[in-house]
Length: 582
Image 1: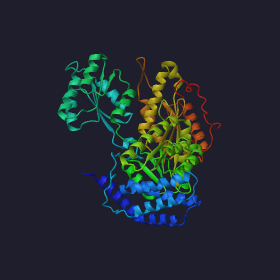
Image 2 (image 1 turned 30 degrees about the horizontal axis):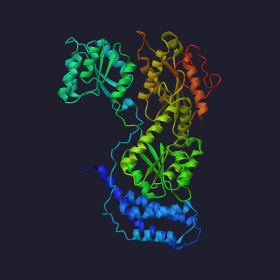
Image 3 (image 1 turned 180 degrees about the horizontal axis):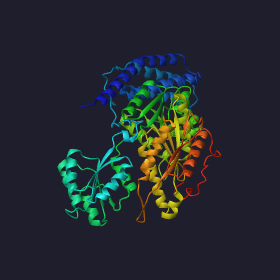
Image 4 (image 1 turned 90 degrees about the vertical axis):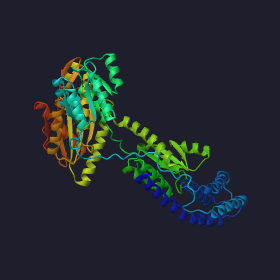
């Protein structure tokens, strides 16, 4: 049985087919009028181009909407016109006869909505759009984790640390207690010790029993003081998802839990469709939207640069033949704009001549899709190319160690956020965070330990902040957080909560445990009116927090309390500029 969403797609496609049929006689009439204005020996390249565009559109749209009988006469007329345009552009009697025959053939077709539709397909797969939220993760449903180990101190300590990363952890010290809890409310994941008083492999045995009883396998991470092959093999045999030797590092465990519990789909791809045929453009937009993408249609090529300023496209789908500005010419225009040099451009056209396709690609386009195009193939091709583009873009704008926005990107995003704040008259806050005594961490425990600290703080910020907030690695051990819609006092409360959570995380280096803290400075808009002033003010507040004893959050005020200037934090105990992916 078709789903409601698929039925909706089919109904919308039916309406587009009806629109095509209603316009079909008018297109033929326009072609006859243009043909009547031609005579053998004429040199009317513009009229020939108009005729070519009409037949090209009829061929591509007709076949895409399932009217297969249109294809042959429209293709023959289009090919005859293209050959004439590619040669001397002179009108000949055989050309006029050919076009007249093809028009008569098209006019004689019996087309209606009941005509067999050879390409009546809905999307081959559906991707639900990602819903963003301005609620803090603590206000959303936390991921439930069951932790079972017969060491009560370990379970309490690990549960506390994992809660700092946004997990709701319920500890158990007996297998029976775990079984009872699973029967009432199965968790997202189980963290299970291998050895219990019941036996050397009692943990894996309990998981096998639960899987049989529930007829499903709950993702399980096994932990053990043993790192031998036998223990690992037994964990694998009962469906274990991961294995962590003790002592368990909370940061590493959180990374594993993220992979096992994160089921949120990615941000929908944004696709710009450029086609002078509104029905064809809407048909392609429907297919992409059904699969979870966000599509924007533009029918006038000259509007594309302006639209791209506000629509952050992952990919552009572009018709090849359009009046006034061809797809090739539009691609050349976009490639002249530095910001769009790497923007993927895919032609969608009924052009089948391979030489012309390659010539169109030479100007910097990335692919060519030939109409008629089944929705399944369109969705797959667009998804693959957009995903690759997003990956490459991420490498350019994100810090390689932490995965956060890099220095330049977070500053650009701050400018955008402040512009939005001015328009909506809503507050924006910038918090500058700096890990306390980070140089000492690197010198004492080594740079790998320092990396662990930076990654842990980055994870804390990502998981505990809202999706509308922006987080970047400003440089070294310094981080920048843009908090949207909060005043300075509210922002201070948020950052202070993060500070407390981060201070509770235990790190390990060569068997030695240690903890870290951070200091922060908060500055707000509209008190500080531009990005430069906001950054300097937050940095001054950070300076005050450092010199007031560290591990605290300070709010900036309008009066400069130290000489202004970015990076005005001459704290040699904390400074560490290299060796940690900076």
